[in-house]
Length: 116
Image 1: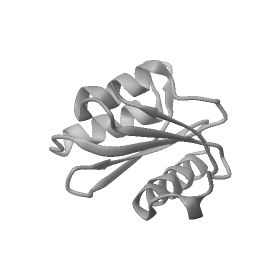
Image 2: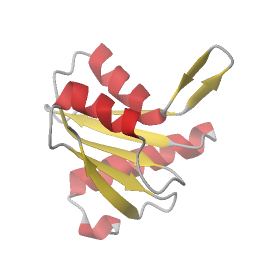
Image 3: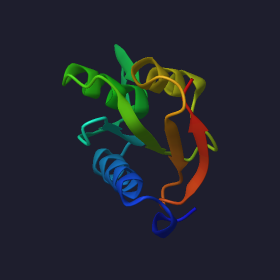
Image 4: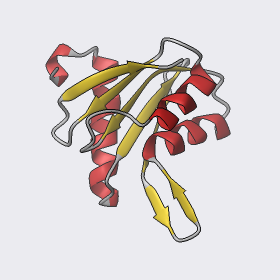
């Protein structure tokens, strides 16, 4: 699925995730959109004392900013699918049924998982 085939707001979080990944030189970039339309992006953190995936960090940023739910999430990665722990983090904040778009580095959506 290409950006042209996506909802414009979903395409936006993929674009932001790609930009964050590239800027940080990280293996993953992620973006989430909360129920008010605000977006949060993050890149993978891999320090000796702190390791966190991009998607879990984006969810944490939304929570720390006061978000009470999510409408969508996206992760840009070389992996074929989102890690179960990442989808679980989305479900923790969003509940069941929220799409988690998994896109390659070129922005093409490979799979869509759903939280919960």
